[in-house]
Image 1 (spheres, chains in turn yellow, orange):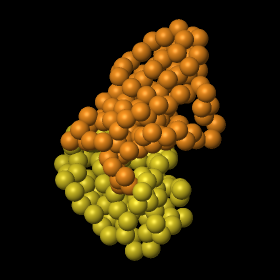
Image 2 (image 1 turned 45 degrees about the horizontal axis):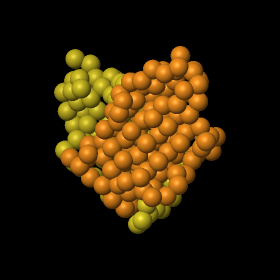
Image 3 (image 1 turned 120 degrees about the vertical axis):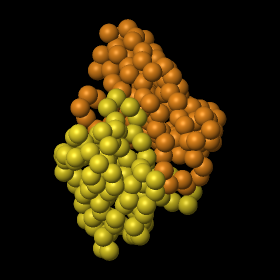
Length: 113
Length: 116
């Protein structure tokens, strides 16, 4: 599985957009980019995933560069409840199996009032 | 939808005893379930992958005889920590993938194990 690099921590003002970067320069063609987050002492929460195209759902947007070597997770209007550790993970997904997730250290996002 | 539960949420046991942790997918069938452990201030570490009806696949360095995994149905997987020792104290988290080849995994709330 390709490795990812994320900044260890970031701050964001409440109500502003939070842009979390991730580098995955060794990603292979059939690997997806996943984002999960973990609020303190809870299980991780799935946010979004993508392969090549940008994706958006009710939680966030995922922007993947054309060469797929990096991506950015965007929380459009961060709230205090978005304070968490955000994990960018690259994983293979086959037609008959779900790829395993290897968690790195993630980015601790602190949303401030 | 896509809710995963774990039981118990917290457990304290004495050294040398065994502890069973249950992971259930409440509103979907999970062909594949995963078990992780997380030490304080560290990231999640994948322990094993279990597929319903077959033996679990353990990650390198995880003792399969110590961490017994049973995935007997499409909604239930269990992790048994055998002969627990204080160093096994950790936060154990399971996840479940809905269906075959699902994109996302849904995580349980975790089980805090303390071995005294």
